[in-house]
Image (cartoon, rainbow, N blue to C red):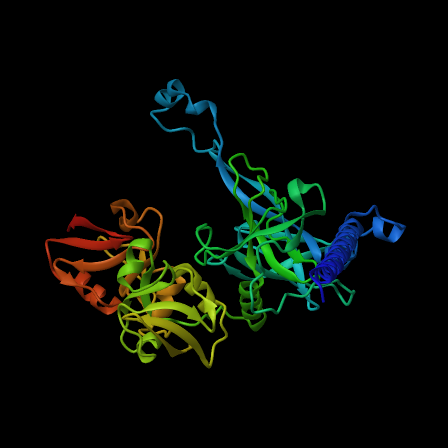
Length: 493
């Protein structure tokens, strides 16, 4: 083949290759254009104008119709005493009468004070749960249903440690609505849609909508178990005790407080999780105080400064600082310095989270704790059992010419210490109450004080306290523990 023929064949092949390449490029561009059009169509289908009445009318109304009838208004009446000003409060008249007003002049009167709140019916037996502060000190409680039926309520249980109260109404055989408590053991998540239903400012039943802002807010400090669902659904005065529900209509929390400087909603509200509510309701139905597992150890949340020394990649969990002998924590094999980072697979963020997780666990059986010890991860089985009542409380009233005259005292057991909100390692004799006007009141003793020693002798029980007060001495020097301070009270015979 001549050079000219070779050249002509090369040009022919080159033209063919170019034609194929151009064709492939055109097909590729066409495919991309089709894909882009498909994606645009898909996006437009999501953003399109509603095409039917059904689509326009999508709402939370079905959930509200399901739940709202079980949310009730609560009217609590309490009797308060107030001082009445009289002409004899004027300095001239008091001097004229020698500093004392005539005996027949009333100086104090009683009046009824009404408060309002909300509640939720959670059982066909007429069991209603609300916030403890709604009915605090009430002498009469009235419940008004959404259909305007009214019933008097009997208080079954007040648990101030959780700010929850449980009451019952007798509907006399009438049908009453209820809403189901969420049975999920997992917390809701930030971003979940929620509805708050209650009676804000006494306006009547009101529904607001928002999202879960934080599923585990543990730094609020409202109750002993500071673990809350935070929401931006509008919650105002009167909403306390009302329902926080998910879009499935299940009760996920009881609204309890708001963060506000002026008393109105600022978009930061808090609800007690359903897991805690279930525990309190079950105790009320059984006619007992709430029983929660006893840990028997104390510690602190892991901070950024502690995490490095504890071989943690981030600050999380609770580091144990004290473990009581023979407690569940001791029998589980836990040691001082261990860091609890999870319970039954649920992460422990801080000490408050651990307290909440244990408080909502069922008694009996064990919980699996994930622990970091010297940089190594291990799992231990923690027995879930109630705190013991040892020693017995032995509640006693102190009488006679002694500094603690008028004080009501008792032995601190783990169960009693938890009930009073004391630390895990607190032992001894606690002042439960004090009679007004007594020697103990005048000397400055307070309920909650722990008697540490008398005249240099340690006090470990009510019997030891009684013996120390009966001793023939010229006077008494009493040392008490009040929170983190030690105070000394003195009295001569």
